[in-house]
Image (cartoon, rainbow, N blue to C red; front, side, top):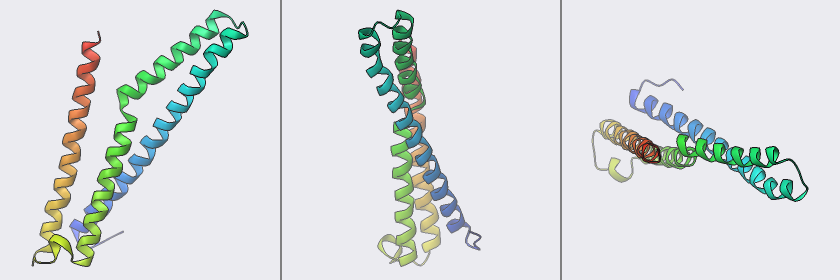
Length: 143
């Protein structure tokens, strides 16, 4: 969408980015969890039917690696955070378009929209950085 309103153009761009990243992280999270569940369920089955300990142990290793990958990359947290930010941005867009809520009593609705959009994006970035730092700290403490 090409617009002569840079604030609306940025808003549309950010809604698209957060929507796309939310969907990607949801798919990765669910795929990893499904593989983890299947591998974990196969461990007692493999042991029960007498499959070599190499296969049984390999399944256990796979479960551990998949869980570590999920923990390291925070797909679930990213999915929910990106979806929330996307929906917040959509909410701002529709309030602005309707000249409702905080946009009703102001003469500079575009300026207010720009401030509120940037605030939402900044808040999400700060949350992301905080979650990464926490994840790295937990990984360091485990060593």
